[in-house]
Image 1 (cartoon, one colour):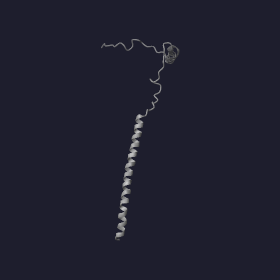
Image 2 (cartoon, helix red, strand yellow; image 1 turned 90 degrees about the vertical axis):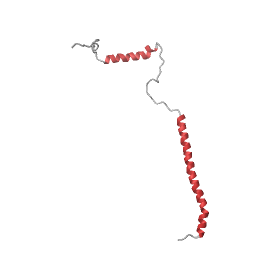
Image 3 (tube, one colour; image 1 turned 30 degrees about the horizontal axis):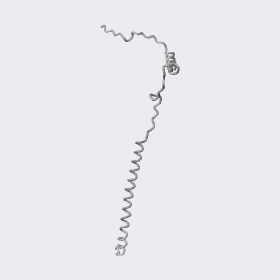
Image 4 (cartoon, one colour; image 1 turned 90 degrees about the horizontal axis):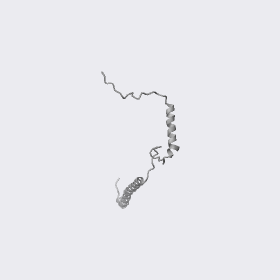
Length: 108
């Protein structure tokens, strides 16, 4: 099947439209990628500038209580003493030798 000259005239007249369409598609993809890159960069900058929440570390050094000289006897010291007394009551009485483990016998 041969191509007639009239067909070539139609094809040549449409070539510039096809070229414009392909060019706009390529430019559209590049533009779309550029927009996505800018959006990603904005998200990263927001994350960098954002203040993160502190992680819950439980009861630790971050708890600060103001204690005066009298407050230990009233609240903090009393509770602490009660806990120590309970520990002493729970442990069985063991007789310990004060000199045990302090002397070394070198005799042969």
